[in-house]
Length: 230
Ligand code: APR
Image 1 (cartoon, protein in one colour):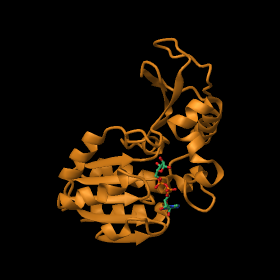
Image 2 (cartoon, protein in one colour):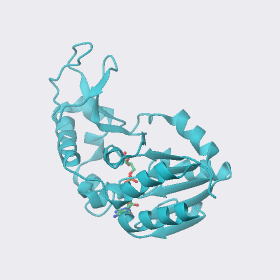
Image 3 (cartoon, protein in one colour):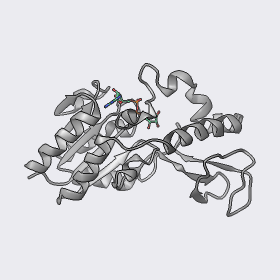
């Protein structure tokens, strides 16, 4: 019987829900220079461009539905009594829409942040540089998204969960962005088994004990069936 499981998800788990990924052939970063739309410097240079980018992603995500992989992870979290923690790099709400709880280390499209007083609130569908913070009233609102060069959220909690994990599984992530790409090493050092579920091998595939390849909507439900059947 497997003990506590920590799962890391990336854009690949939401690809079949129509949200696309970042580094695949027609990925987001092939269409937008990430320096302009996913860094604090880009936001300072052109906040209107950054708001337009996230308004488009927010609208896209609002129309998306969880796929069989999200539903399988929600079932695993409900039924695996030793505990399942889902850490996601994704900023969509598809884990929650499937009934799961997830730790959003890169923030959430559905949340807004005040760059002045750090208040947070539910983001409107459309944000703009003239939007005002509901707390301090300053026109300094931004998406509550962790940009490149900023520190991811909830890291102490995540490292604590990795130390306790019996099994670490990475799903649909290319292993290009740290600290998430090093979670497999953190988990291994703590004695966990490690498994990669992906469409193609990630940049850190050699750090994993095992791997299975295919679309998340197929290989994740099959893996969950196996775990719950043990
Ligand atoms: N099923 C499973 N995996 C898939 C599928 C699919 N249908 N489609 C694509 N993938 C895999 C790709 O093979 C790749 O390994 O999903 C991964 C997508 O990689 P990236 O586009 O780099 O996305 P991700 O790893 O989540 O990026 C990490 O980088 O841009 C930043 O903050 C952003 O959270 C993001 C972080």
